[in-house]
Length: 442
Ligand code: NAD
Image (cartoon, rainbow, N blue to C red; front, side, top):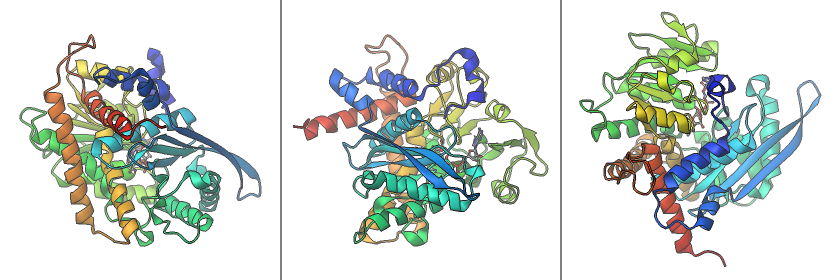
């Protein structure tokens, strides 16, 4: 979902999601030894793209047609896994690029899933709960056997939540009676087989990955988040939880935002109070004793950590030179464009990449899937600590590889690549290796 109001267009930078994901892939693939051309093509392209259109009866008795997508990019490591987003700007290209991201993310954290993603073109803010339920049920039934506990397992993403997942489960279960269908979807309500810690997983993971990078000495003199000034774009499932997680560790949350704008407080916001205000008012804007700012201003605020947790392409060629953070921590998927990556790297600003930073979500989704298979329920501390160990291990792998990376070898660029590229190198190597180990069929 390219934010067309971002100003990136002024720089003639392409925000086409496929081109962006291919540029990121090519940048990394240049460092992967012995990757055959045909294998590169296989890894770049989605395995299967489903496009569905369906009618839905609306509250006013009218009928509206909706379009949805479900893409399975790669299933070498296991069933497809990835969220479903509801947004008016969803496109097939965006869903394909996000499915690819899931392949690399799962491979990087060693979760035995492939990459998938889904989306429905709709504006949840203009739909009643009943309309949303009908859209969800019809979208799920159109996909029918494309989804499945060992086939492709959705989860929440932008503007979908535990309720959406409960409807997907129920619809799938109606269509496939007589089986344990709970593992068909993750991010379910706890009482329907959801797991403790899933709602908090992605935001908590953002903190755990950041803490590990700091502990490893990424920023000289800053070994922990305590005292660091953090600005967070997006105050939804990821942003709000991340705000609370960083705050609990002594960081100062100086700014947060949502789709309607942002708020700033030099003295630091209380994320719990902001959450209560947003629940009552529907937005963070207007929170007493705060200064109202725009989303553009939030991104360019002077701070230690900038944590985008909303849409893609928010940091682009048009604003990367104005980013004042020391560290960008990608809670959202694809928030930084390739040109912005270069600009930030030139300016000495590290970007901790989405496929690592927000991988806590899919990791705990995997725990939910495991629990559903054996009908167990693990407590919050169990899932959170297991997730912490897995994202720390992945962070160490990326950091070690980055520290020992042979700068510029065979690529014409004499710098050590950024963390996104290093993380992608590791993930691509793993998927490519597994593909060859399985043996190319027939
Ligand atoms: P969400 O729908 O719960 O929250 C999204 C937030 O972004 C809301 O506060 C919304 O108001 C805000 N927003 C929307 N448009 C905006 C705009 N133009 N400018 C600023 N803010 C805007 O979604 P989420 O689940 O928190 O997902 C956020 C991001 O994190 C997405 O990129 C998603 O793909 C990614 N992500 C989510 C998860 C997860 O577990 N939920 C996991 C991995 C990655």
